[in-house]
Image (cartoon, rainbow, N blue to C red; front, side, top):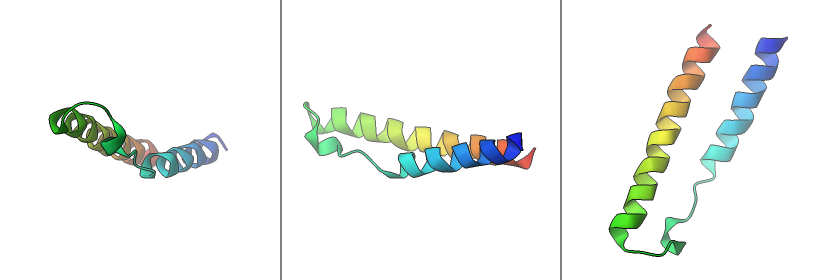
Length: 57
């Protein structure tokens, strides 16, 4: 049962991460905004790797 709830929690978190923020509203130059966008992409990639590792066990 714990695996079921963990899988559900990961699924809900993935739904939240799919809602990509709008970086054009941030103050600063394009390099500043691109840095945040790159960080977001890296976080999503790490989450997917973590999710796959957890669900394999």
